[in-house]
Image 1 (cartoon, rainbow, N blue to C red):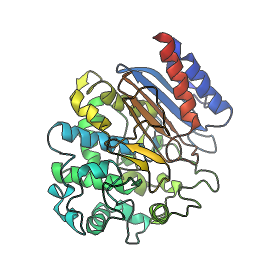
Image 2 (image 1 turned 60 degrees about the vertical axis):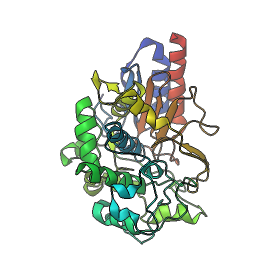
Image 3 (image 1 turned 180 degrees about the vertical axis):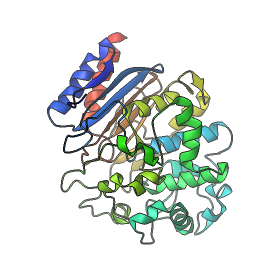
Image 4 (image 1 turned 120 degrees about the vertical axis):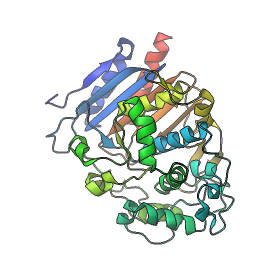
Length: 381
């Protein structure tokens, strides 16, 4: 793999996926990337290749990981779903049941489900904060607890790009006495042997691919006239180069700071697609997994400016995101990472990369690979 070529495996019926993945690298659409798919809990595609840095001095290896921005939210949602499945968390309960200080500024009736579906009205901070502040858990959560919502909670979604992880994470911390990243690691990642981290140890820095910022004019919120979008994207500013720092990697930023590869993302979410079992271990009930599909809200998202449908922590298919099976859900990260979880076909698909595109919800690189995988599935059925 010293030349950045494609490595990994695909079952024979998915040869077209390898072709599409190779073409993305050869055509310089991707610099370095990985793609994986599971079916019935079995990993059927696991590909990686290209380069981990812009200078093309470090090949993208089997164990290369990268910051996946908002694909991290799916891991945070899964952690909350796990607690709910155990009866420790009620999504219909007021947040203040678990986090009493949150009841300030008229938020006593805001539900945990509102946090999970981006409809709590807390899409950004009203107080000016610096980017270093998001490494200070107590500060940013205290500010959110004290703040009035930007809109009436539960009436509309407005993408909580950075705040959602702190909000859900603080509920998890109040219930368990442990940080979100710790609960995720102890209860999900380690039992499944999955290489995904919310709060990355320094010992793993050498494996991290460098994120390449999107093209000029493609930054999050660039040119937006929406005050809410401007607030979300500039307070504090979001700079992909921050992801190369130890401060960013060490911090638990459960909406945007996760590090992993496609294999870990696909294999962790196989837990949901397969009724609570992954790697031969049952961690959740099937009903607890399907809870994520419960429709919460739809309409034009006040931040993204597009039609959105949300379940509990995940996007649901609709006219803007048609998926083959109704019991499916997805989310993606700034720059292009994406995961799709299909309960009907018991499949997961995951794509992560280091060359960022101007997107927050996946792009055609991922969709081309997923379409090739669907073709392989259809041919075998």
